[in-house]
Amino acid sequence: MIGHLVVAGAGAIGLCAAREAARAGRRVTVFDPAPGSGASWVAGGMLAPVTEAWPGEEDLLALGLDSVARWPEFAAALSADAGVDAGLHPEGTVVAATGSGDRDELAALAGHLEALDRPVQQLTGRELRRLEPALGPDVRGGLSVPGDPSVDNRRLLEALRAACARAGVTVDRRAVASVRDDGDRVRGVRLADGTEIDADVVLVAAGAHSSALHPALDGLVRPVKGEILRLTRRPGALPPPTRTVRALVDGRSVYAVPRVVPGHGDLVIGATTSENGFDTGVTVGGVRDLLRDAERVLPGIAEYALTESAAGLRPGSRDNVPLIGRIGPEGLIAATGHGRNGMLLVPVTAAAVAALLQGADVPAAARIADPRRFAPVAAERSSQC
Image 1 (cartoon, rainbow, N blue to C red):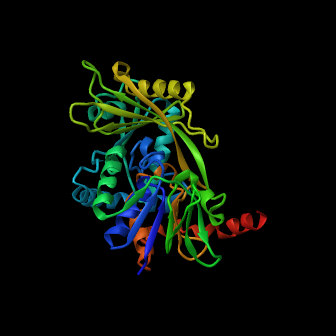
Image 2: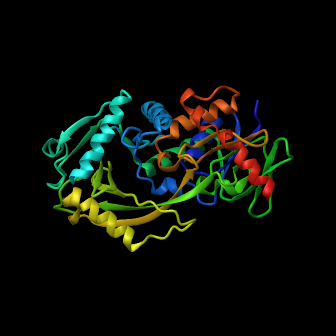
């Protein structure tokens, strides 16, 4: 039986793992100076294994499909534990294209998915507008993907915090500076204020900051910046779409995710992608580009209020596959590097971490996320320090 588990990071991944461990009877402390912030706070909330699929990433698609299938049961159990709704929005996704080049790209995606026995429905612009009247006349065609739902990330975080509190998880608002070990096994963590905390197992779930916490993770996770906007429907404006709308606009990608809040019509618009270290500043160009492309697909948003602009740092890995599993000394577990799929992979990550803590096998689809695939790289970096 594992004694004290320390979790570095209180985003969605860290909190869901902490909840699972506490429910299994373990003592759990989560360290984070700003719980529920970071990439989890500014996420779009798309649960989109199919519409995020790319040729060459078939294993990642399988991981995403495993996780999206877990979402209904996961959300229902979390809602019951927390006493608040976890924010799952079961409506699917439409993918819209404007020009002929965009339509050709979506047709290629549809062909790729059909070859994998994951067919999607190809629709004309008129057929898409029957599904979502908010779509504008520039939309010439696209796809319907009913199996790609979404989640309100902020309601999810609220539910995770409440469920962790009910399960007895301690949340400490101090930052972990490093993981302590004796060369063979983990001994605990050292906090930014110099305090040393003993632990039998340490779970690193610190998102884009994970690489700095132990040499075994050095260079394996990097920050990938994404800017998002939140819009709120004003009186007299057209209703927002009921489904997630993803679009290709002259080769650029944009998405709009509805938030189901009684009395409101909020949309999250995203997301830019850039690699500028740990910069989280919102840029004029990012806001301009997101509004321009989103308005072309959903012209009614011109009457909405712009209520928030923010930037987050997705934790990117070397191969776009997350790191979920043991790495380095005994007792060190990573749950990081989820990139653009953080919200999607919450349930399967929780299941994998729970299995690791019990000494059991992780779900079959999660085996590709074993961090030890990078062990030679991490060892080489450590020897050069």
